Amino acid sequence: MKWQVLGEESTSGANFTIEADLQLSPLLKWCGILFMADSVTHPAKGYLFTLTEDGFTELLSLADGGNRISTLQRRKSGILETNHTYHITIRMQNNICQIYIEDTASENRLRKDIALEAVPSEFTPWPVAELPLEDTGSHLAAIAADPGQAELSPTDRDDLWRNFHTGTLNPLPQPAPRYQNPVLNGYADPDILYHQGIYYLYATSSSLPAGYEAYTSRDLVHWKYAGKVMDEVWGMNRWYWAPDIIFRNGKFYMLVSANEHLGICVSDSPLGPFLPEPGYLFDKSIDGHFFVDEDGEVYIFYVSWREGKTYALYAMRMEHDLVTPILSTETMVIRATETWEQQQAAVAEAPYVLWHRGKYYLTYSGSHFESAGYAVGYAIADTPLGPYTKYERNPILSYHYKAHGPGHHCIVSSPDGKSLFIVYHTHHDTSTVQPRNICVDRLRFVPVKGKDDRLEVYGPTVTPQPYPLS
Image (cartoon, rainbow, N blue to C red; front, side):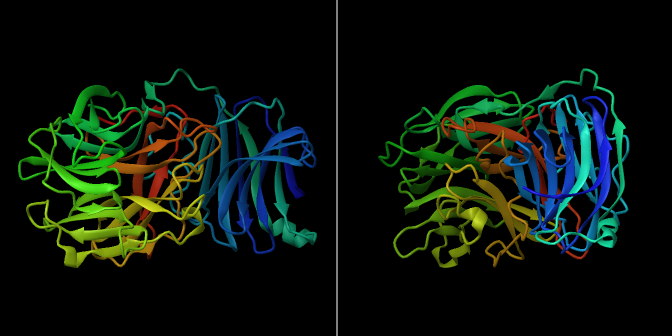
């Protein structure tokens, strides 16, 4: 890997900041900041954060003179445009690296007092990366760029960067109580019901052959086992996946995926027993999700590949009894057509729908669940049945070197109702898929001038996080 050095600085100690304004120019394959390096040209150790010509941010670990490269995180940014200048802030504090990107034209520039213990709000930028990094013991930093085959002229070099400087941070004091992902081991495909001040979690179990179990919590972090809530249904004795539950008309309705059959079970209590309707809805169908529209109409979203159906996400309206589908309304809403949806297999699954400011946000997972690149994206429509337009910067939740396969999620509010959280699963670790683990991170809508609000996730986190508010 080769680059031109445009500017050089040094840091002191293990706790520091680096800031610079960088222009994402069409002249470059990438530009970025080298840090914690022992050489600015051929580092035997160090890290490199880049903005790429195709709109990605990358955090790389460098060794062997820059010839050995490990990708710690690569994600598509929702803000990067060519011929535009961005303010980059790298904060290294208590061995946790946070990296921020801000449009230099933004009226809401990064507050200088922001720290790891600050609780992000709608006025505070979220980092594009927050990861633990090993202290290399080296202190060189540089602005670096790759112009491809040509060398940059002095004029071009000067136009690409400015305001490059470093600073010193104090180690953080002992923080307030934190939680750290994962919050529950051995489960996947979570769904959460918030009812009378209690969160009820239902999920795919790594050990239960048939039926579902439940956990309860008051803070989304500490989960207490509440027992088995459903037994074998419709004669299906395996593959009980991805339950989804709503409370409606004084009863609890659960969409069940059993042996690749989709059906509905009903209970008088969130802890069951959930009893099946006389017959299931469809075969060769999974990942059901209930959505209640603003007008009270109820829809189900699901994956299906039954006879005559292309493997895809579908939706349909339900009768007011919530158990009878209106088959004439069935509509295909999402197919796996993007690169990020096709890792190991072309898959779009795990739908979850939010209504926000007159728009329907269909969030879903893409790629085979066993791939490291299993991830979450979304699409927007004007009606529940679409047509849906995929967000151009998907995915919004994707893997890094400490967490693989983040996906199959639900979205819930914090106990005080002021914040949104995404609850999802990850692989057991970066080398083993099963048993999977449940994680919780923040999610929000970000206003974008002239466009629909953007969904943004703070995660997948592996660092200590503030508790959801109560």
